[in-house]
Length: 418
Length: 153
Image (cartoon, rainbow over all chains, first blue to last red; front, side, top):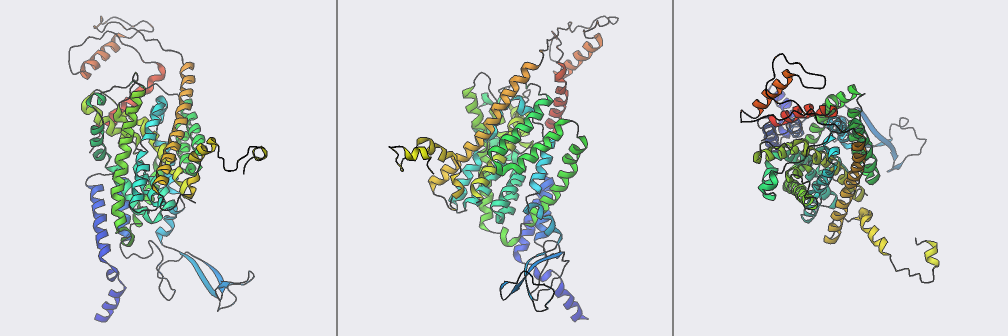
């Protein structure tokens, strides 16, 4: 009986546990604590943390098919891609792979495991653009159209991406890895995943976790930088009331932005096209059912799958590395410099146009954490003038940041993907 | 490849690179060949080009939106503000003439102002109705209230 129990014990997952896995359990625990107890971006951090925990458990049939030395597999197999070979060379084209029992098959890929399929959404670049569809359906570009010069603040806030590229390169990362790390400064999770999956898939987990963590920490990271770079006089600047934007303008905006961005940075097409499709559906007013689906069901389902898929990339063997620590540090640098870039951009704008100044606090909203960054600008402005309502003004650079980050990602892709 | 006309020119120098081409080199995508570990100069040029591309894209959209805004602002009829009666409570029997504010509405607005400014001394000089197209302001105000009600960490 004891031998039977011992035999059974040998089939359990206990003996597969390593100390690295245990550390990753702690990491997942911290993420879950931040999400659940502290409310830091819980919609994203909960699936990511859960995925990270699962990735560091000796699961079977969840991530990939487990294949043993004798070639047998222990979990469900859905499909095997193979090609007949003879003596290491390809067999003749007319060879029948089932005819000769001695024929050798070179296995290219064994598919299986729940998340082997679901993670194709990230590997094949499907989830980020589809999430952009929902983002577009949720975003009101009215404030940006009413005050289009705030687009420049969204552009200025991309400074952190490029400065961090430089820093990452100095720290020993390759150009592709540096670009993927720099994009954290854009504070746009789907774009960060989109880019790093193409340029540096080996860093995807660390980059996604850093990007989403810093997005949730916007209210902590940005205010000190905002106070450091602005005077009290600048913080109480009241801005002119935004004009009303017609439906026709919003529809034209979606089409124009899509055409311009696709022409200038074709590599960002997938993101921009889906963003503007979602927004066009929202503004045209005749596709209510589709808009509701994009705003709710589609984006929610994808968020679950994207989050857990990203979490599943956080396997101990590739996450517990010095590179991860560097990425965490570089991420906060990217975020800080982007915030500073937006604020300085607003100050320069005021020097150029002193008669119609903008409150520099809205510059920090140029990072595209929508609407968190805009809300931080508003709250920070009200701290010094309780009757100053900056929220809608800050939404302009905020949504411009989404476009700016997508354009920057397109530039990185076109310059580095070869 | 040099254009045929340029090659056949008597003073053609194959080593000469026109200034226009130098400028286009900076903005064109030569960095597709960016090495894995670029030098300082290559890295700075790469960043500069990236910022130029981002500003070019968003700047183009800005320019087009300004043009679009000029067109749409011109096509809208100007809404004239309407002077309202004084905010002192009118006789209860008074009724509003067409186009004027009813006494009940003036009373409601006066009460709302009183609450909004927390009882500080005030005098309502005029009530200016918003243009019809500004009715969305109420939606905006609602959204602003919702955002402002959240406690940021």
